[in-house]
Length: 92
Image (cartoon, rainbow, N blue to C red; front, side, top):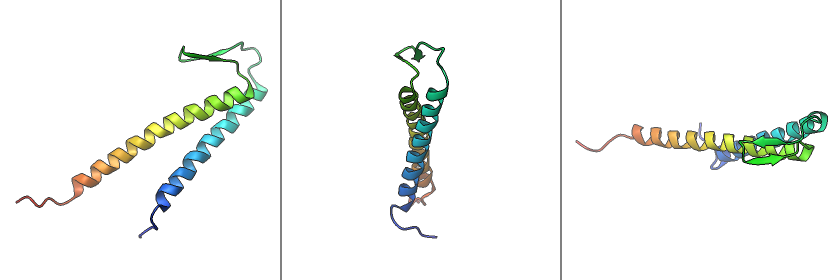
Protein backbone atom coordinates (compact mmCIF):
# COMPACT_ATOMS: atom_id res chain seq x y z
CA UNK A 1 0.00 0.00 0.00
CA UNK A 2 2.28 2.69 -1.23
CA UNK A 3 1.02 6.25 -1.19
CA UNK A 4 2.11 8.98 -3.52
CA UNK A 5 4.80 11.23 -2.05
CA UNK A 6 3.37 14.04 0.06
CA UNK A 7 -0.16 12.62 0.18
CA UNK A 8 -0.08 11.81 3.89
CA UNK A 9 1.41 15.17 4.85
CA UNK A 10 -1.06 16.98 2.62
CA UNK A 11 -4.04 15.24 4.24
CA UNK A 12 -2.62 15.98 7.71
CA UNK A 13 -2.35 19.64 6.77
CA UNK A 14 -5.95 19.69 5.49
CA UNK A 15 -7.22 18.14 8.74
CA UNK A 16 -5.20 20.63 10.81
CA UNK A 17 -6.46 23.65 8.87
CA UNK A 18 -10.02 22.30 8.97
CA UNK A 19 -9.91 21.85 12.75
CA UNK A 20 -8.52 25.35 13.26
CA UNK A 21 -11.18 26.88 11.01
CA UNK A 22 -13.91 24.89 12.77
CA UNK A 23 -12.68 26.17 16.14
CA UNK A 24 -12.77 29.70 14.74
CA UNK A 25 -16.33 29.20 13.57
CA UNK A 26 -17.42 27.90 16.96
CA UNK A 27 -15.63 30.77 18.69
CA UNK A 28 -17.38 33.30 16.46
CA UNK A 29 -20.75 31.67 17.16
CA UNK A 30 -20.18 31.63 20.92
CA UNK A 31 -18.99 35.23 20.87
CA UNK A 32 -22.07 36.27 18.89
CA UNK A 33 -24.68 34.63 21.11
CA UNK A 34 -23.17 34.61 24.51
CA UNK A 35 -21.13 36.38 27.00
CA UNK A 36 -22.70 39.81 27.13
CA UNK A 37 -22.39 39.79 30.93
CA UNK A 38 -18.63 39.36 30.78
CA UNK A 39 -16.62 42.57 30.72
CA UNK A 40 -13.33 40.95 29.72
CA UNK A 41 -11.73 37.55 29.66
CA UNK A 42 -8.25 36.88 31.03
CA UNK A 43 -6.29 34.14 29.30
CA UNK A 44 -3.72 32.61 31.66
CA UNK A 45 -3.53 35.98 33.40
CA UNK A 46 -1.51 37.37 30.50
CA UNK A 47 -3.91 38.52 27.79
CA UNK A 48 -7.18 40.31 28.42
CA UNK A 49 -9.77 40.74 25.67
CA UNK A 50 -13.45 41.47 25.35
CA UNK A 51 -15.48 38.44 24.27
CA UNK A 52 -16.50 39.74 20.85
CA UNK A 53 -17.22 37.30 18.01
CA UNK A 54 -13.89 38.04 16.31
CA UNK A 55 -11.95 37.89 19.58
CA UNK A 56 -13.47 34.54 20.52
CA UNK A 57 -12.82 33.19 17.02
CA UNK A 58 -9.16 34.23 17.18
CA UNK A 59 -8.81 32.77 20.65
CA UNK A 60 -10.33 29.44 19.57
CA UNK A 61 -8.15 29.26 16.48
CA UNK A 62 -4.99 30.11 18.42
CA UNK A 63 -5.55 27.62 21.21
CA UNK A 64 -6.62 24.86 18.83
CA UNK A 65 -3.62 25.48 16.59
CA UNK A 66 -1.20 25.43 19.50
CA UNK A 67 -2.63 22.29 21.11
CA UNK A 68 -2.86 20.36 17.85
CA UNK A 69 0.59 21.58 16.85
CA UNK A 70 2.13 20.28 20.07
CA UNK A 71 0.43 16.89 19.65
CA UNK A 72 1.44 16.73 15.98
CA UNK A 73 5.09 17.45 16.71
CA UNK A 74 5.08 14.91 19.54
CA UNK A 75 3.56 12.24 17.31
CA UNK A 76 6.06 12.94 14.52
CA UNK A 77 9.00 12.72 16.91
CA UNK A 78 7.71 9.49 18.43
CA UNK A 79 7.15 8.02 14.98
CA UNK A 80 10.68 8.88 13.88
CA UNK A 81 12.14 7.42 17.04
CA UNK A 82 10.16 4.22 16.63
CA UNK A 83 11.23 3.88 12.99
CA UNK A 84 14.90 4.33 13.84
CA UNK A 85 14.74 1.78 16.67
CA UNK A 86 13.14 -0.86 14.40
CA UNK A 87 15.89 -0.73 11.78
CA UNK A 88 18.05 -3.84 11.81
CA UNK A 89 21.48 -3.31 13.24
CA UNK A 90 24.57 -4.32 11.25
CA UNK A 91 26.66 -4.70 14.42
CA UNK A 92 27.76 -8.27 15.05
